[in-house]
Image (tube, rainbow, N blue to C red; front, side, top):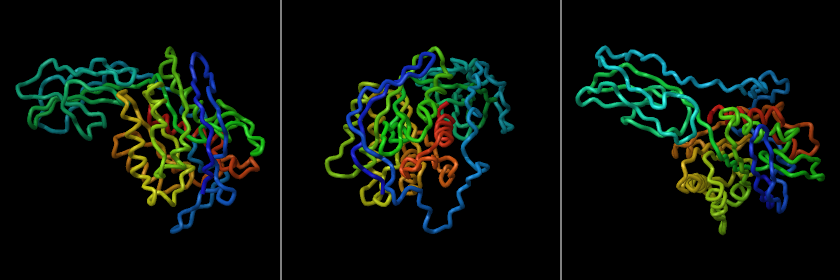
Length: 366
């Protein structure tokens, strides 16, 4: 069971103007949100024999640092129309995009216009590579990627046209635990002020992710706020706990990107008895309910928390938010900080593990 002593409260705002500057606005108290000494390693599934941890690094799921940090510029030129698979086609040009692809602020409106629209025909677009289509002449960008357009009249389809979009964000809120930030503790042998077990601030997942966001739109001043999720991890489903603690960062900071990166301090054995599913659903509803367009990204745990992870996957999909599955890091000893004598600190991701977390999140939000 993870320690549930009172965590510190703090607010960190990072302004990126050529470099990342972290300003700690508040730090009232400190405690350890790391596992108890008798349970420092992820517990393997009782029904199967876990694979021996790979200590060579050959099978590490973590990408090599620097391997995916480059942002490919998004072309503002749409691709050539694609012939539909149906033989019964419309001989009209597919709809045009305005804007015609590129890098834009999230919630930007994209309009679709047709040079010629046959009687009773409709304009359609797809955001999932043609798996499903929606009818409409405009949409609001909530994710990056390629959008397809076409015209449909009954069973007849036009060629398709595509345009690629990437999004940037102005205000990112990260809800996390000591993997996000932990102050120095001589008792633990931890002397940094950043994500626990990262060798330097610029090597924890918060700074790595923020630096990548900067590459999307270098001219923008991006703000970052960190908020501790330890109260939710330790007190969800208990009398007296309320989600009102999140009201102030939501209404004052007005984030347009929220990363929910928690789970390690949740007692997985109490997920059912304390109704974690309902409480996590209420948390996501609260984060999305303050009348501000927002992208919400949720991650699974980097420790073995099967009940928590299953609930995160289910509720995140149910609410239509973005899921980042971190399960491939489980059991990968080379991604954790075994160099620390304190087993609680050693159970945290090291630089390689931090890079893995940042990279997985980045793949979903760019």
